[in-house]
Length: 457
Ligand code: PLP
Image (tube, rainbow, N blue to C red; front, side, top):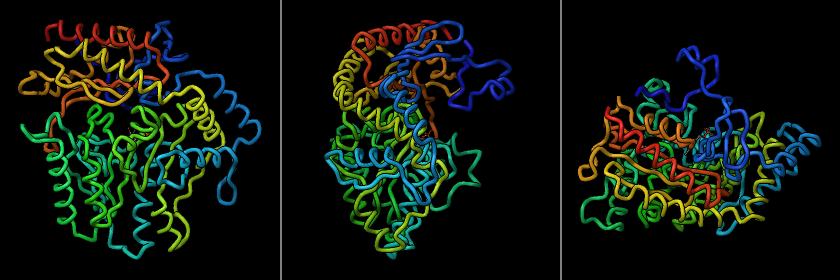
């Protein structure tokens, strides 16, 4: 078996052909939870693209809303003007309870949202008279996007290595809260949370008590390591350390947010409201390119007390058609109780995964929240050994499962200086997936996994 899937790269015919000598597969149509390829195959989209198609594909209501918006107003610049769709969407997002976030700005991608959040965290400290706060702490086994600022925070060495000389200074990474691999034998959740918080505190003190601007973290780690979910109390412990040292808590919910965890915002599980939050992907289900930065009153008050503006304009920010898609998707979230459906179907998916893989000799852990679940694969369940990087198992699984008619999101395992993680398969289907589709998904997943492990390497 030779792996053909290369981890997340630009996939246009010309470039792919130049690099790989063959054309990538093409998807020509999509509806609901299904994709159709140019060769006629029907594929169940068990990853909703990359956790994007939150209400499924081809929803006429969203398409009409976007068409109507483009007819009325296709674009305007934001130097002076705003538009009703963006205003209504912002109000909806910050009006959600439990609250604490009072403002929103819109951009086009998760990377842009995180880049803006980095700048906002920095500018906040300048505005409140603490310009010495230049450092941002993030975590190993994290992904925050593709731009230089985001790669600087990202904790995946292979994503960083080519660009190291270009990356932002004043960043560092601490351990993620990864109970499967790093919670010690006999250590309670509370003790593990305290140990993680002690690592953050030690890093802040190493950098300098007054030099850290933000702790930047995914609430549940997504693609970087397959749904690493923190122990209860982790975020409360981290928040206490942030507050002690005047450090902003920035939560990247680009992947885990907007209902995917079974609550609208993933931080609702934690009882901890961030100072800054980024969202994207499922926010408008991929009908247009849209992301957002949500800001707390604390941050707004900081800006107000200083220059009174956030230095961050972009040509396509607050795009009316993208906002109209977001509004239409949010209204479907409400009318069809999409988040509640996610919680119910998520429990079904989890139960089906436990039944299918609970005793599998190579499935080390099944983890996640809502319709955001992963399987971490290991050579041996006792030792939690990872598979050789050059196998690469994730690609083999991804291809085999695709050949069984299901598209998943896979990630390679690594044993690096930054820590160990196993190959994983991530599932993030549309939030309105049905029980029947979940059965089909898990059956094909099982067949695909069996295809790989039944084949001698
Ligand atoms: N942050 C997280 C947690 C992500 O998963 C991603 C994308 O996968 C991003 C940021 C970057 O988003 P985008 O690809 O839209 O720039």
